Image (tube, rainbow, N blue to C red; front, side, top):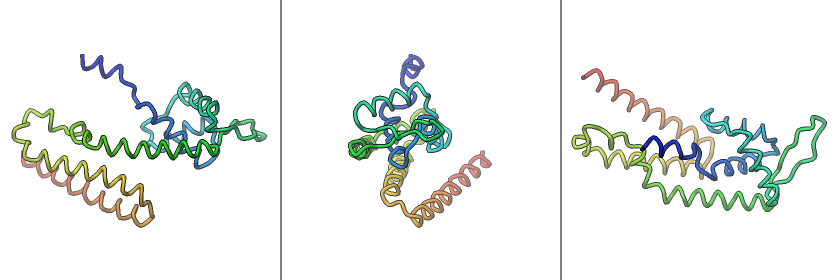
Length: 179
């Protein structure tokens, strides 16, 4: 039953594609294929939307006055830009995303927690709260970093995350060697 339920879920939540398209078009005029490649790059290769999802969305955005076509160049490639109305829509979408993430933050620890499905749940109960704190802190860290995106903040964040990951990896190695 669980597999059937998972199979019927969309692989990418509704609205995510729209957010990425608006974000990319805010940066510069782009064609549909450039948008697909841009999303693939933004997601580190984990997701490349299909033409069957991008082009209908571009048509919807244009029909609703959020984008318009840029006159084609000699290459004949059709590119889109955000209109003033599209810029406002993007800002609304961004604020909605931030509010939604804040409200859904409490869901992250249960969904990301492998300990909840462990055969040792009683023994691991003692670290459940520290794990939740860690995951919440990581989500807040990411959101705060996005709000204060400077070169120095990125460098500090990268150093901190690398150091933390190394400590966790060292602990895993020690635990494995001890077994």
